Length: 211
Image (cartoon, rainbow, N blue to C red; front, side, top):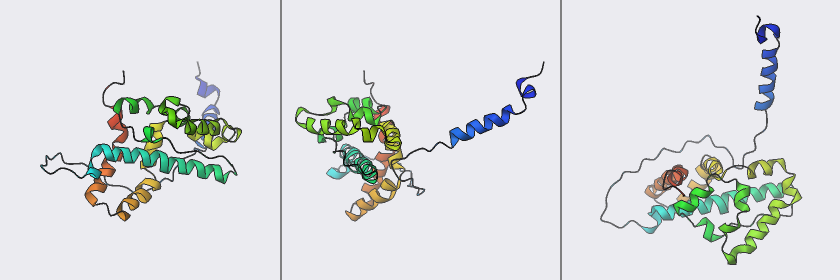
């Protein structure tokens, strides 16, 4: 008995065409991909009698990373896309209570949430911050967003994937690192910043169970 390939010699070619169509589907990226390689940082676990400067405290750096990712890089790029599409709408920044929260349990809960889910999560806002929540919800639900293929694809990406996309982008590898140097940050601090960025998602994902 002949197999399917023998019966239909064109089947392989048909499959190639199908895969070609799938692979040619345009994938939208929020950030600018960078080929520049940052060094893989390995921090030495040394005890020191000297108290680390406040800016070098790991928790403080994680707060800065989360805030810079969400309220500077991400919101800025989303609004640039809206403006380029002639929209009069814009996203407001996330509340400080959210972007400054580095509690393991609450951060684990958002790792696999899509960006749209995060915008729609009322529990991330304090009662006095709900104005921001309703504003962004209005933007998310607007026809301009719902009919924009690029924005819809970005909003359906997971928080963890977007963060990884960010730290591999020009916006982080060049712009953010240059900003640190322009602010006269020491190389030791910059190395620590890069290290914590490269291990940001892993730090929250491998720690205590959220349940």
